[in-house]
Length: 374
Image (cartoon, rainbow, N blue to C red; front, side, top):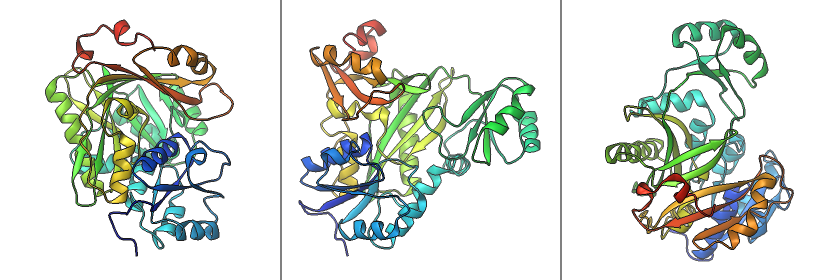
């Protein structure tokens, strides 16, 4: 039986070997823990920095049992890990966050219903299982609208914008797996995200919201703190804290939100793990989102989420991102991070860079000035 808090030297299991697992393992090492990464891909970014590794499919029950026997607790670095894998592990070793949080965030219909249940506003939506249901949903919600898969969509994958009635049938035929979800097109003025950690005693710590910009459906820039009115920023923090408490998770959760012209916020997507839009915390806070996640999973007290700098985070995507690496390494005030990936394919997240700005200065800066050096 695992006793919490975990003592130094304990082994934390991580399902998934991507860059989020890599940075979580690095944070765990700083706190005195070793990590065991389980993933199907050999030489994944997380495995490069972990003490132990298992290369096996998520469906391999024997490998999962051996993995569980070698660790004190299990967490995951992406929410599309098969629920059956976490269910198999949950009977053998504590899993944080648990299966309930994973199941809610893996299904967009369950996710929207959950947000409504805890009082976080969302855009109008309808579940869609057939072309006739899609036509009925469009009649209620109107066009334009966004049709999405309920599972396995990220970075713009698994969705289509419907602008005319002629778009319905091709989009329904193309998107899979079914069922789908139709969401009203939101005339937002900004996209923001907020990240909260929740400890096993129910304590919640919330990082300042970040304002996000996307390019080709992939996060490009995050500005922290988001340039919001104080009451809107407070509402964003309240919403993500409600998500963390409502899911009763132990670990980290991110909530993406749309900002409307009148300052209202609409919840969009939940991620029960560290999040790309929280990478600025690695250099602008005393404890990063990854350290907070490890602290919660290990049963340690949460650290303060306060900033000691403002920051702008820039993702390094594909060949263009890697071409900027020599300049970023040489730029004062910019902290670059690479993920140890091989080929710089178009659209692949190779790393990120954080530009640190004196506390309180970002809000008054012109955008060109804020991005100087990135």
